[in-house]
Image (tube, rainbow, N blue to C red; front, side, top):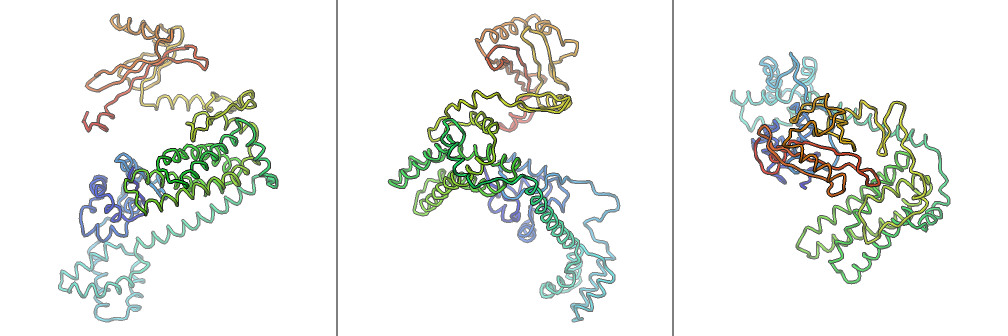
Length: 506
């Protein structure tokens, strides 16, 4: 992925990724194609600021950049800010002739040597604010009237001093700074309030409690500690002989870090108000993983490469210490047995790393899986709970035509919306075979019979329909024990894939 920091100036980004010029121009940033603008304004303007000035949706910009293979890093802009149509009577980019003449008058007075403060007083009395474009237009008019460029350049700082703090751009920037400072103060107050809202914990025996859990076979802390021991062994072996063949195994720490990022950090922060690990250690995890990934891609393993490698491996070694002596003890004090049971079951979804397979934790296996509790009127499922309205809207939002046929071959459900293959509501509660023409019915019967008798789990059919490439997929639906309970058919328009991967137009 090409990493793009939206806090950097546009000019700097285009130097790193020249293709951005064409992409940004296509989004409406037409000035980016003009070198003088790119080499001047582009050196101080960021993409989010430019989007705000030109009223272009940041959501459109971000999705376009991601679609072009860019990974956005650093502080993300406000995605909720959408382009709004200009209202009638709003200011245009073209300054009025009268205002331009007034501004020229102030500039001429300065050029004639009049005192800056005297001119500024008149300006402040007669003008509430001024657009940067108006100042530029006035200076351009003066040059057209014969004022040498050198003279305008000489007085540039004086001009800036005259209008300092009065331009709309500066007022917006100052207002943004005030809002940002206010939000930071509010956030700090909220964090303190949240922290005070959580019950105080006794951490005096945290290490002993962690050690006790680490000794329980199969407990999440047992597995995570085993992984740390294996990683420490790999790092020690690399130090001894600098065997670069060990690096792929060391890079499996990304799996270990993913477990922490998914199962420990968020739960500590949200449920118990312990934000330190999430705010600090999580970032370090990402930096270690990314640095190892970047080093692995480089072919020139010179002295500088080895120095960088040693630095990141040292950070990985330090992280082992932080986990064992800070993170795990904090978790041991806070998490309940039921929460550890859930973490144990969730761990099963992750790949094995460093050769440490998850062992059976009998207490978790024997405990009943805690039910997911919803409010009255909600549909409760193992993965969460939704209202009927939410579930219906969710199924209708998925970009597929979805049909479910039960174990008795009866149509039980179609999602709503326009369909390539029509499914009338009257077909619900009918046998599925009655919905297919005679020439297709034998194939449908065979597919369902194969599913029912475990001869296959899915069947994919590619076809052209109304000039578009469609994928029709039939899948056996089985319960946790593997018993067949029905068939789901999904139909998906695949033109988007052709356009994305092949560049073909539909």
